[in-house]
Image 1 (cartoon, protein in one colour):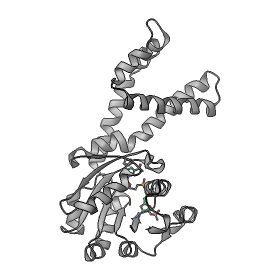
Image 2 (cartoon, helix red, strand yellow):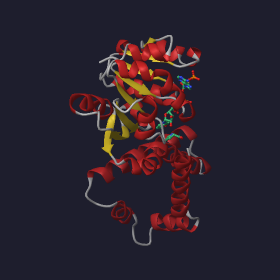
Image 3 (cartoon, protein in one colour):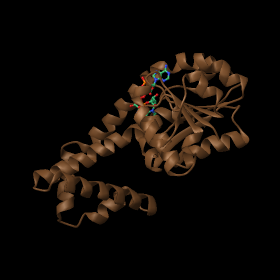
Image 4 (cartoon, rainbow, N blue to C red):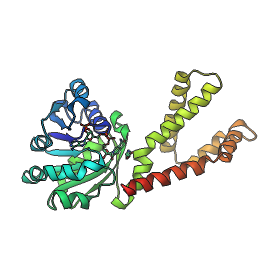
Length: 265
Ligand SMILES: NC(=O)C1=CN([C@@H]2O[C@H](COP(=O)(O)OP(=O)(O)OC[C@H]3O[C@@H](n4cnc5c(N)ncnc54)[C@H](OP(=O)(O)O)[C@@H]3O)[C@@H](O)[C@H]2O)C=CC1
Ligand SMILES: O=C(O)[C@@H]1CCC=N1
């Protein structure tokens, strides 16, 4: 499979790293381009991926083309590459937040096979969570291959497009929120005398373990909270103090604002 990327920023690099690490695509079959090659030169040399001279050259040489540009540039880039895309029956895979299938079809053509996705940065280590929605032209082996790319670097969830903004907050943005929680937990450890490095290692290991517990057990997170909270003990005291400071309200408010911002884009 020849895989092209238009846009080689943080998220494209995360996907490429995940695909190479999981032996899903060999580096030499990946071709990339963006307006400032200096921004990805080091990454391209370190991974062994190929660099093209233009967006059109990426499309010409690829079976699957990943649109990984900032949302503001997406329409112009689609206009620029639509002839190349349609001439050769390529598959377009978009990772652009807020860009609907219909908006892509309007610009790139109604016959084009398109997969809209919303991955998260954890794809870099094969632990991503990606929402997918295919248009009617993407079926059979092409759909399986396009979906397979994201299955190989984590999990996928086929969702109606109406749920993409919620997914974007809960899975696309939330690595930042979870990292914020990990850093806050570690900072509290530093306040009480641990080094930042050791406190971060502890906080991250606990976060990973607790996520695995939720996924592996048939208990709800609230059941697991009760299991940790000994009667009259320290955990319930800490939990109540966090809730008095508004932890649940703060998280839900943050997600509300994230969804609203995504829908404005
Ligand atoms: N970051 C994340 O966790 C997630 C991001 N996304 C989506 O991924 C997309 C990229 O985000 P991210 O990687 O974070 O952003 P970055 O700012 O890191 O990267 C943006 C990329 O777009 C390129 N670009 C801009 N204009 C053009 C153009 N005309 N032709 C080709 N390339 C162009 C930039 O090129 P150059 O550097 O040369 O200027 C750069 O490589 C966004 O649409 C975002 O919504 C989706 C899910 C999660
Ligand atoms: O911050 C953003 O706009 C993108 C969407 C999901 C994660 N990053």
